[in-house]
Amino acid sequence: MSGLPAELPDVFTGELLLGDAWRDHSFGGRRVAIIARGNDAVRVLPDIAWTARSVKVFLDDPAWVLPALPVPVGVAVRAASYVPVAGPPARRLLARAHLRLAVRDPWVRRLLTPDDRFGPHPAARGDLFYSVLQQAHCTLVRWPVYAVTEDAVRSAEGIEHQVDCIVVPDPDRLRRIPVALATAGPRRTREDRSA
Amino acid sequence: MTYDFEAMLQTIKDKQWSLADIDWDAPGAEEITDEVRARMQPFMADLVWIEHVGARGFASLAKKAPTPAIKEIYEYFHAEEQKHANAELALMKRWGMLDDDGNVPEPNINVKLAIKTLDTFGDSLPLTGLATLIPLLECALDGALVKFLLDEVHDPVCHEVFRHINSDEARHIAVDFQVLELIGAGPLHKLVIESAANLKPQVVLGLIVVFTPLISKMRDNIVAMGLPEQKLYNAVKRFGSIGGRGEHTSRIPAFHVLKAQAAMIIDRSSPYHRLLADPMVRITSFVPAKVLGKPQSWTEEITHEPVAP
Image (cartoon, rainbow over all chains, first blue to last red; front, side, top):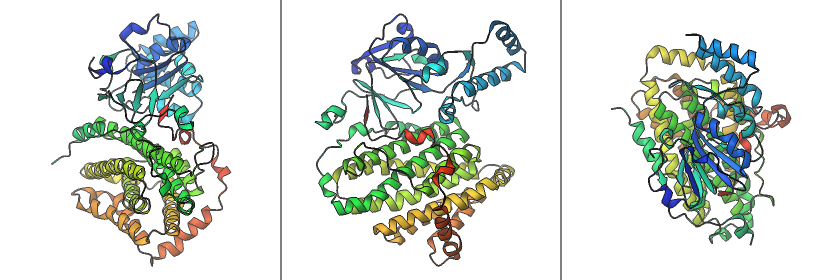
């Protein structure tokens, strides 16, 4: 578990699903956090969002996402993308068009645009990703995750996101999360406060 | 000696804090009398929005960062500025400055203009321009506003929050100026080209129509609240003095432009105020918010709830 702190399983009291453990798992009625990098999130989100009550995608470093195209077009495009030199930019162009058409909000689009300056990002198929991500029960969080507490994920914008279940599809590819906090500070939920 | 950005990144990660660490219902809120509340409300609202605009500035910087480590630092700074805005909003909530639904107060027109400009042109600005502008804002904020707030308000929670915020801001300023050093140490032709790119009309206009009245308007609000103008000016002066300490920063033309503007801002007898800044505040006050279009969706992400269900 290179990207996650070693004490995480002891600290987090909810369900922790690493690697492929999310497959065939029922998330009915649960609040799920997906902590993932680029393509991993694209891979797991549609299945999890199908059953979960709410999903927060803590997305680190988004990747290019390619749409599903009708067979003849798709085959032609796929063939074109294997052309030496011109192939990869063509794939990126297609992915960029997909993003532009699938996500209307310019800020969300900006959050989902990969930064290729320090190494190109691969483009993978994920035709449902954008549409699922924009469903009402899914939230995209691009703030860096800095800690996991007993029942929540903390990101650097200072907010604690309470979840029942954390899915980490590929812990090895994750940017290191620094700490797991056993004791949280004074905590009052919305209900306590109004009481 | 080169600055160790990796070590700074690690420090930043180690020093993270959360709104959930703070007991927002602790005693002390009664320190805020009705009179203080009415006086402070617009000031706090400005503060929240300026932090929020600063956050957007760091988001643009992250896209321009020269190395992966600096990029990650900027991503954290973006989040931290958002955190400061959230924390200040939570303070407003604690002091009863928000309406019953806890809505975020509406920004004034100058802030709205800044949001629109930054959102439209921020990502296309060369690094030198934005990286020089942000520390100026940070100096003004950090030095004057926050100190003033702590002198005025004796709520222990407020002091706890601003202890965190100040230590974050100290790191922001340190990194901002180290990045300027890094840029300044770069090859001359790159500096010249980037500076020429800074002369795009939207940038020059942005500086005059957006930045100039924003600073002056803030000054007016603060002075109306009772802060000695001199304190703000001392804080702005720090921008020039910290930057001047660097070995290479003075090679950046944008630094000199902003330093000159800072010098004019703090000289109350300068024609800058009479001929440019004060008329600009008046003119922009006539701009209807409608022409700026729909608010950007990132301005809605700000919240006073420390825990999201």
